[in-house]
Amino acid sequence: MKIVSISTLIVHVNHRGDWLHVVVETDAGITGVGEASHSGNDALCAAAVEQFDAILQGDDPREIARIRQALRRKDGGRAYNTALSGLEQALWDVLAQSLGVPLHVLFGGAVRDRLRLYANINRHVTDRSPEGFARAARQAAEQGFTAVKMAPFDEMRHPYRYRTGPKADWRPGVERVRAVRKAIGDGVELAVDCHGRMEVSEAVVVGRELAEFNLFWYEEPVTHTHPEGLAAVANSVPQPIASAESVFGVESFRPFTAERCVDVIMPDVKHCGGVMELNEIAASARMRQVLVAPHNPAGPLSTGVTAQAAATWSNFYVLEYAWGEVDWRSELLSPAERIEEGYLILSQEPGSGHRLNAKTVERHGVAGASMADSSKVRFG
Image (cartoon, rainbow, N blue to C red; front, top):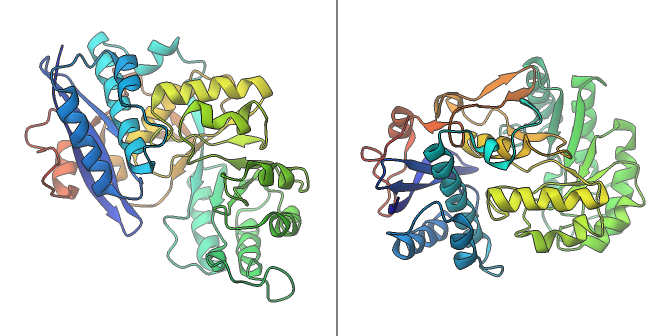
């Protein structure tokens, strides 16, 4: 089997970003697809995919280890690493399809046939008032999600701010959390994402303010590039700390696994290096009993791919689901992702378990010179 072409295919989502896919076509009639969304620069990501196309045409797509090693660049930057992660997913998709098995079979088989989800409401919420957050969280809970995540600290984007006192810039965020907790009650778990916007002392103060809301985690109060700071916060607040959504490569996860600076790590299959890297990161986390809750505020394809890997882990915790972004999400994949009572049902179809739906791609696709012609790509 040989690679015929590697290209990108983008579907438009909203003002927060599109879903970018890497498409690998082979001379055996098998098409593999991976997701490479949210690199921060779709043009750079697509340019990296063009490089892969020039390098890999004629290669065997099943030689995944060799291709990973040839293209891997620890210092390649987020866009390059996201492109590589999407390519690697697509290669695994090709391999599993060629064998007629779902991807999890290649990793020893699943230990669970459904995976708990939490609804990330942040990309849905445009009304950023406490009432706006509360309304979205209540709707997610009514749909059966047993856990919700919000990112309430809009006022903390700038470095020059009040960190203490009655006018502290974190106080509106706390009121949003208060409104959401009241709306969903104590029976639905609640996580808070801070996007790494705080200093250590500030994060400790805010973490203690949030204690009354019984969070199931406090996410990146300090940037992932400051693991010592995360550890200091973890030792000073009552909530579990989660981090590492943007870290690439198992080696870079060492502070989060071997040294355990946080309670939960959040590798993202779109950024960490792909499916195999995701598995290696999860395995390394077992050394210090660190839970793994994959970061995944993206499209249904990355959700399905992540599920194929995470279904085989002993230390899987919960999987992120981008709730309420678009009303056609369920139409993008064939078969559509199945969500029942807040759980994703693991697909048993070959490959990643899903194909892109050509009609939905045609309806929402973004035109571009370097992207796949959806009329020529074999989908489901």
